[in-house]
Structures are given as C-alpha cells and as structure tokens.
Image 1 (cartoon, helix red, strand yellow):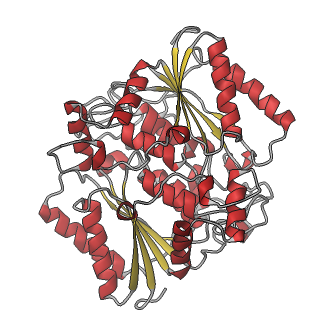
Image 2 (spheres, rainbow over the protein chains, first blue to last red):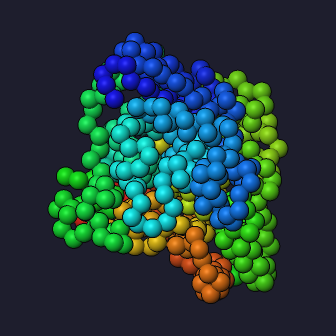
Image 3 (cartoon, one colour):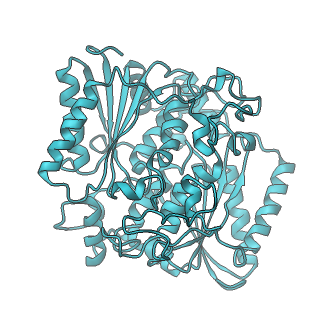
Length: 257
Length: 257
C-alpha cells in the first residue's frame, strides 16, 4: 500500500455502537479517509452477519468433508453471496484492520464466524499437502493486516509474567494462524488495556495514538514471521535445527531474528 | 466426579452429523453412559444456537458497559432463556467435555458464541478488581473439563518446532483462559490429527483410545495451573520472582512444576 490513496478494509465487531471499540473504529476510519485512503467497513453486528459456518453456505456440493466442500463451492462459484462479497472486499483491499474487544482471549464469535466463513479453502489457502502456499504466501499476499483490540484487564496481567499469558502469545493464533497463514503481512497490534471505565482524558490519548498509528500504516515494519516456503522448515513443517534465535522456544521460533 | 454416576455435559459443535467430530461425540457419549454417568448434550448446530452476544441477551439493563451489563442481567434473572438453560447445565455437571474441529486455530464461531454468551459476568467470574476469585476458583470450581479436538493438519506441524506452533500453546487460551479461569480443573486434551481422509481402521483406533480416555475421566490428573489466589502472583497478577521451573517462559510460567 502507499501512503495515500490505498484501499483499506475495516472489519469491526461490537454489539454496541457507543462502545470504546466502536469509538476507536470511528477514529481510525476518519483518520484513514483524511489521509486519502478509500475505506470500506464490514460492520458485522450492523450487517447481522451469520456467524456459524454450515453447508447452507456452499450451495450444491458433492464433497462430504466440510473444509474441502468449502473449496468446491469456492471453485464452483456457489458460495453464498455474503461470503463472496467479503472475499471481494479482501481482494480489493491493500490493508485490513480488524477492530474487536478481547472476549475470552480471542475474537467475539461473530468475527470468528467471519474468519471461518470467508477464508474458505481455495480462496484463502490450498487444501492438504505441504507444497501449497501458506504462511507468507497465497491469495492475500501483499496485503497488510492489523488488529485494534480493546482489553478489559490491565497491562501487567498480560505482560511477560502476567497471569493471563503474554498478550503477543495470546494473539499468535490470530496473527500467525489466520492473517499470516493467508499471506498477509501482519503489523504490531494496537492494544488498549483497562478499558472498563475509560475516562475521556484517557480516551483522547488513546485516540491520538491510534490516529498516529493509522498514519503510519504504510510504513510500519511487519512482524518478521518465517515463510513456509522460505527454506526454514523441513518436509514435516518443523523448523530446521539451528535456525532459531538462541534460547527461543514455542511461538518465538517462527519469528526470524 | 466419581467413577460412575456422575453428571457429564457434552458440548458439541460440527455442522455435519456424519463428520469425524460427530462420530467421536457419539463414541464418547455411549462410553460415558455405559459407565453409568448421566449425560446431557448441548448440540449447538442442532439447537440453532445464537452465536453473537448482543444486548438482546440481557433484557432491560441500566449498565452501559457490555460486560458489566451481562452481570446485571445475570443478577436480575433477565438473561435470555437459552443462556440460563446452559448455565443450569454447567452447574448440574461434574464434568464438561467440549467436542469441536480446530478451525483457524480455535473453536468454531458457534462454540465461541456459547462461551461468549453463557459464561457471563456474575455467573462465571466477578467483574474487575483482583481479589475476586478467578483462575482455579469461582462458581464452576470442582468441575473437570476436557477438549476433544479434530485437527486437519499432521502432528509434526503442531509439535515443539512445528510451523503452526505447539498445539498445547495454541489451546492455552481455551484451557487456561476460559476453562481454568472459571475454576474448572482442565484435563489433557484428546487430539486427533490428520483428519481430512481418516480411514475406518484409524477411526477404530481413535475410537478405542477415546473410550479409554472417557473411562479415565474421573482419575486423570488435571493440568497443574497456578491458582490466582494461591500466593504465586503479586498484586498486579505477575508471577512472583523465582516461582517458575528453571528456564520456563511464556505460558509455561503458569503451570506449577
């Protein structure tokens, strides 16, 4: 994407328009438009988005396996219109910003349902085998993605030794497992903690930081996850010995140093 | 729970009854009943479970904050009947088994919507503050919980160095962040990998292992997560220095050695 005149898809999930998440979405959208970007908004609650993936999404398919059936429907052009509309928006976008409150250490169900239903086999990834492009390659490569997340709890409880676990690890399944998996470049998330009674002075600070973050969207360095096809992984998709930063374990292994 | 005659709630989410997830749910339920347990089943797709939490769930409430409003509705008894029925099942249960396919490194949206809507403030946890019981204490303490998860990818790609990340870390937000948070004792998950074209011979092996696992449900040792109130955490909910197993980082810090 370029500094001005890019296409940005904002996907937003909160049941209350007067929520902090809703207010921050408005701040981000205004800033992006001020910079000359074209913005489209997927407001999942306002759309009454269907969250539960099921065979009604596919039209007539022969394949019994549910995941592969989504691929058959994609290739046949029989996916339901709401899904096709979102896939078209993703292809249109140069950047995707997901706005949501952190509920039970993940996305609200309605947004998980956007992921489950829109990122079908065939569209967002190939099926089976290890040679097909995933993690850093695929149909959505070249796009940037960023999360804006409102978190009720305070920051120390989400820090390195915090009881909830480090927030970057809690977000890894979304950042790496959803966004990077489909080829997108993932930017550091914009997180707001301790949101339950956020006063207006703190809101202004947060809004200021968010506007700055939106104005940097084109320049920010993505998280340097390792591409599946980059030579770092063996045939069983395990990291080759010695590639990691000394002492790294778990999710850290998949970030290049 | 006891070896026989306990109450088990099975929460199940798959859009196709003829799926592997559906077949394994049937195996587990039969085994549990054979052992003399009483089993109730929450079949989310069959029930047409509403996945998206919204203010229609609450009845008339005054509180503007969405999470706190769920607590007000809980205390006033105005939560919608589908939510109250699931809360009653959880209180009835001695053990809860969640059956689902691993979609995008988490639960299907419909099951996330069961978590989002049923585990309300007031019922499953207190609101705000650090003194209220969470993580190893709370209304659901004394119950056992276990996941049965079908995973399309092969096991090595979910192992210590696997590209997807270690599966136990990918499940941490569910195990620790949802189940243990509400006070439940979390058992090791029952995982089936490489499920896309599972042959009948392998299905029989898996079913055999699952029956054995179900018959051990009362005896299995829970994952020894650290209780919030157990003295391991400081006032900001960070692990006190020196409590960890030597070299542990990230999510591992919250498992006692």
